[in-house]
Image (cartoon, rainbow, N blue to C red):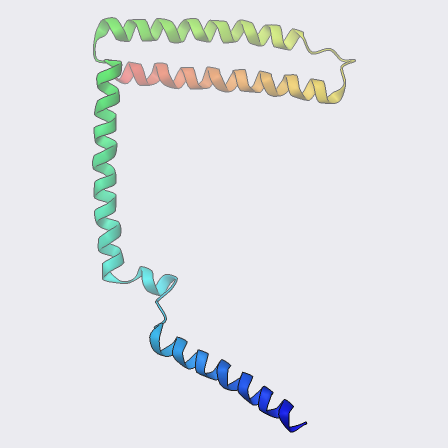
Length: 136
């Protein structure tokens, strides 16, 4: 019976020593909102945002050089492409609408309506592209 007490006392001692070593060598770090308020974090976030903006500006310039939307000829071609795609989507939407039959299973009808909705979203995207071209 006494041997069991020594085993329990030994396990307790090992756990206590492990906790003491952990608290001595591994200092707890600030977490959560307390860490966000430090000047170091704010400076890091600030400098990262500046670098991020600069990278976005370079990407914008690079894409602009590829697109050449400032050139009237290219701008006209892009506009015609968007209008043609818009017309194709309109006709595809009519075909898709006419393929929906009342006796189709519900899942088929929902799938086709989803495809119709995707086509509509594509038209909206093309409208945004044309509006952006007009701003150039």
